Length: 562
Image 1: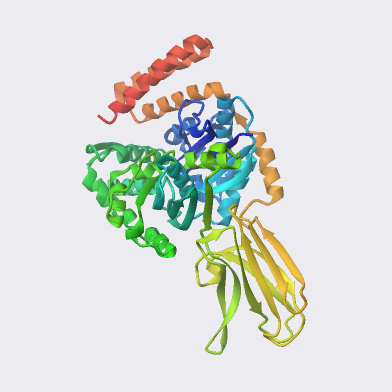
Image 2: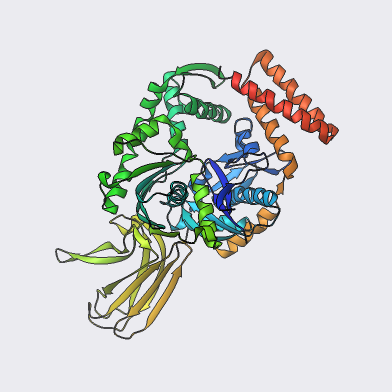
């Protein structure tokens, strides 16, 4: 039984397996290890996933969507062309693409998966991720926190013992985890994070800053111009540390030019880099560990490749952070380690993993303040408790002749219950008596998959109540899940062997739309020539033309930045 590890990212996704005592990252149909988390629909109504869709963000912005991971756990709907999708459905299309890539690579069907999630994902978001995997045809055996997965990959890679801080900064989220590795045990002490801080936010900050340079506003950009500028700034972000970047773009059809350098970039990033510090401080405080007790700071996630990020982390900890394996693949490699553990792989027999509950779990209750009853949130399982965990607290009636206690379960850190995430409730019958005379014990048991088991015992009668919370109001009901499954099965997909051709054509169209004059005409002829070869349906001729077409597109993309 092969278990597939999936890193479902905001910007890019990847998959891997544990084979021959190592994690193997699986290439997609284009031979690339990263698949853009982008979904599109072409003119014939067929679904595009990955690079083919990403290249159409500029040319067909209304028919393409990205960064939908941030909508997981919400009821928000996304319109693509004439169709409407939830974030769960969009994520399932990415997962399905990864599953098909793995099956083609292995030559066998894949039915089981481990999917990584940000440590700071709440239960709604975790449940949505699990459902996305199920919609893609997978049994999701385990959800693993992304920094924990990265730590597992790093721990095996280095064979070290000690206390580490994992700073995981990806395309959309920041996770900070403090953990200890000793005698084959990976023990997580604390996690903190920011679900709205990542590479996408860096790019948006660059877009805002460059628009200020040319005295323009984002509201003046068309959809196509916005996506085009976003893509140019994404490229500039990767190159700016080595050389100044000349940015040419359009605002309402008018050409604009700006030259920016690393100093400009650092100024634009300052507010975001400052936000790195609070999650670090929270994680260290919850773990009860000082910076002097940290043996190493480890960077994972594609955004940690930025020099500005590495410098900021270095200043926080007053040491150079480590990055001994590619940050883009640390999470998925660690997921493969977890898959190997679940497959009972002999090479991993001595490794044990513990993790923590990232948010406090509690109930709505009341307390007395200056003689008055005031509503409050009472924690039962505190955040960063090692899971699996079970805790119990006792509560009493408030009013005389009260015959029912409503146990309303929430997740979060806010003092006001209503500002936390509601997970579910159950009504408990109690004998009529004076206020405060009847009591109940409320026990929460929480596991690594985010399943919360609520047990309530009425002290005077011994009557027991139970509710397992693995769903949430913001998630799909079973009927909605079945409807989504039926609808997704009816969608049309391109054959695997044509995906690269579609991606190259979309790439060419994107370059065409960003060019002018003779250069645009030349690119148009190049595209038309490749389309003519495709129409002849000669596979040998197509393969040769595809290689030449791709090489020329690479040259044109490079020339755009020279």
